[in-house]
Image (cartoon, rainbow, N blue to C red; front, side):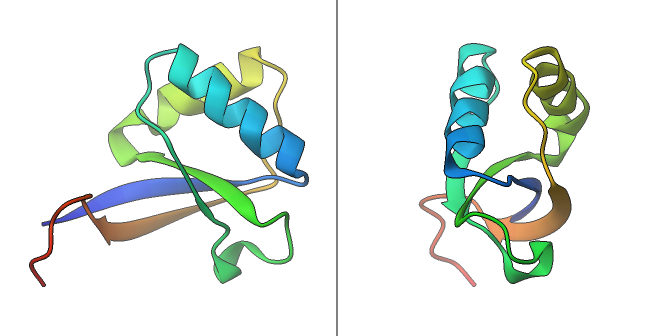
Length: 84
């Protein structure tokens, strides 16, 4: 099954890891993923959240003082789904 996600890119690995922790602490399901090429030359780690969590994700990042440098929506398989 394919779902819609938002991937946030960061200027530094430190920011990406801080974002992952802040989102997890806020109870938002988050995954660290390789930064998509569509976000340009950023650090190699990005975070992915469900599209429906985007507004809350951005609120948590802003409240935590963590700035993302790029954002892209993607469609991806859910973990464990091997169907095509």
